[in-house]
Length: 106
Image (tube, rainbow, N blue to C red):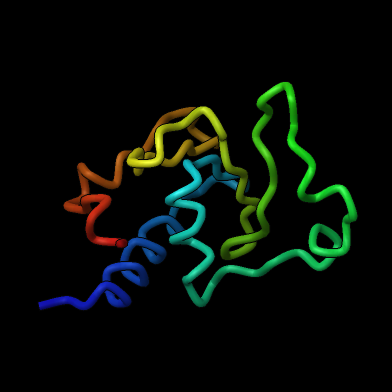
């Protein structure tokens, strides 16, 4: 039986294989990607004094890089949503279709 850590790493591997250079996901999936070894926090983002300011327009915001892909969180996506927008193909990749559930990551 896979541990939560192993499931997170496997999901990260699947996401890293996407061809897109930009990924858009929910806050929960963004948190999962941050737990993967391939995730890098951008020090410019961390040093930005306005990083905790609410974006009133509800725009997606950058959280870092994952395997050389820019990762953005869409604040309007539901917390339980485990889809990733593949910007290259302009389509949503649903990790549920690949055998994952949100509970796999909690």
